[in-house]
Length: 110
Image 1: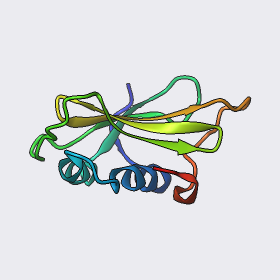
Image 2: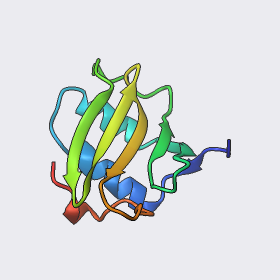
Image 3: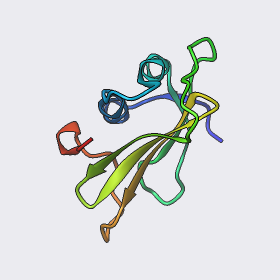
Image 4: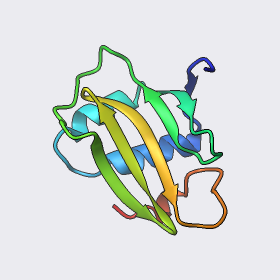
């Protein structure tokens, strides 16, 4: 596994757009997002990334693994949490070609 790296501007914009929604635990996840680092990437070539956050940030009370979902053209985005911490930003698609990066925030429908 590669060493953790900062989120790209595209990854950061996608995560921030999804966490702008109002849901239980969103405030804690927004605080975590500020410290998020990428620890892995999906092997299929899509932009899905694994996340790690600073352990000093508050845990989200979210019990479900899916924190928030959104629609995008030909697919969707999902923010996953594990034990109250951001763990993954997933991009799934029904398109024939696998997208290389997350769509622009204007194409994300919460």
